[in-house]
Length: 136
Image (cartoon, rainbow, N blue to C red; front, side):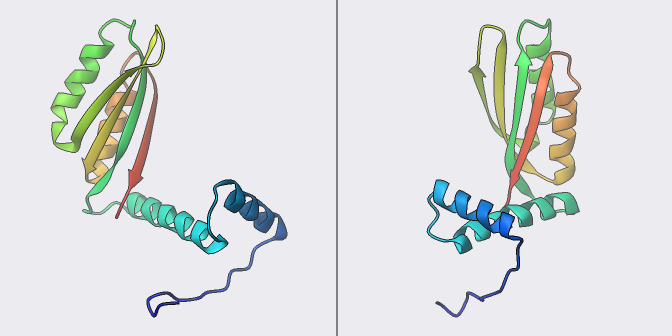
């Protein structure tokens, strides 16, 4: 072990250990420690996101919408143009004859990303919006 890694002890109910071991095997982690480190990275990112502050965040907003709803494409594009400072890129995918998905790569404050997601959620024809934030 290197000097920059600390060893800690963790006490868990046996049902959680069994579940962790199943995930370690299923996802082919090298060890429980590596799986827990991944989980903690996500835990830390969620904490930073929910804490707000002035930090810049990176992530995606996934929007699923019915493209047959009149004006939904124009409305989505208008919101995206109005909030272009928070959007790095957009990908549009046809999921079916009726349904499209857009993935917006975003960067900005928690306030800006949340505002963008909420504005997208409010549009008629939008069926689902998911925000995933990752931090360094």
